Length: 265
Image (cartoon, rainbow, N blue to C red; front, side, top):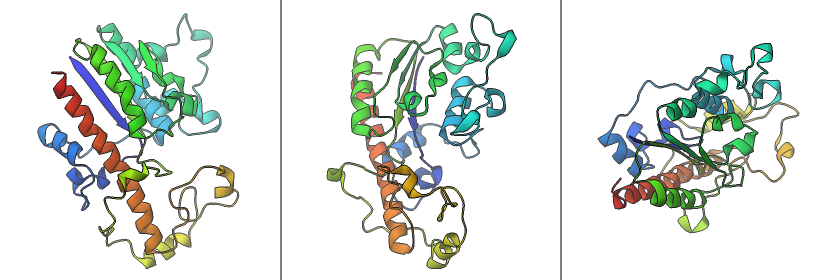
């Protein structure tokens, strides 16, 4: 069996057309969904991405791994202590380790471990490739190493390949020549000026108004989408940036499918 796991950071199902979104963001993913299985009651055990990927690849809930946040001691695996043998117990039961015991070659193409100092997601992988930009890569930068690996190894049997894309994540920097496919498409009609005003009157991390001490100034050189959303024009710019990132990732999903067909995989 050959398993290709396409891991697209920050992609919400409610912004995919196959889940009923009014914009046509994902024609290639839609085609895969039409031929396969589309989950409608599937939940991440942990979030955001560091706890979520740790839970997925280590096959354990965050309450077991100890990784339940992006920073501080809650972002690190705890020491196993006196019971630790030659290897840690948790490393012996990861997704990649389990597949390896079943005879699979396990491969990951991702900058994520370096981005979060989260090398635990690579426990058990036989081959890893770090694209080197800490998650700042566009899909056009991620695709070449995948293409190279598939052309060299894809027709072999029994492999698991993890492939990571980042375009739906801020700062929404899809290449300029891709343009904006949604310039003339309206955003959801539930988003009104009243909703924006209510959000701006509240506060909290990554909400419309950050808590005191957690501001844009903390992240010089990093752009959170369009910045503050004060009106419907700002909201549309934010949604357009996000949806264009999804559309660009989806374009490369189409290129991956075309490559697999070309190689007879």
